[in-house]
Length: 161
Image (cartoon, rainbow, N blue to C red; front, top):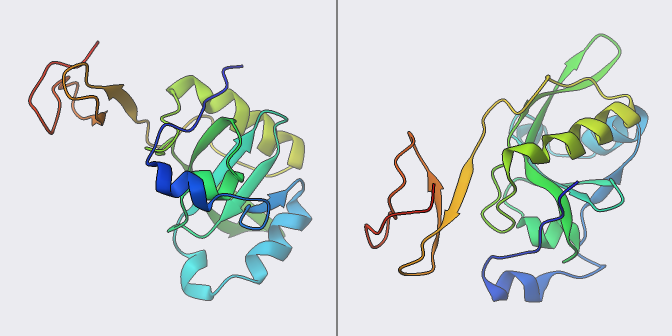
């Protein structure tokens, strides 16, 4: 399992602490309790998630920075996740690896899959939207690769394949 360090803006990392860390989720009941405490409008949007090296899932409101949600630690997965109520419980229905602070590879799926399976939370068989990140060797900025176009959005330099 690959572990990802934070690579985003230092001002976000400076805000991360044990006091800002996202809520730990280890079971379907814990997820249901956490979701019941969220404003109804927020429940209809994706949440920020991180999975640390010990495979602990943490959730925070969508507009939270991933590094703040993680408490500043290394992660095995990070992205956005949304839930829908089915039957007697909640299931994840959309999961992405969209985190420009950690830039997790598509194979980070294994960490979130294991975590949700262990918690007994239903989920899709893979990321519902996969993001590919590359750092530009010319200007140093991180990019999301779109439509297999490996070109920096800022300086037009070629991105590594």
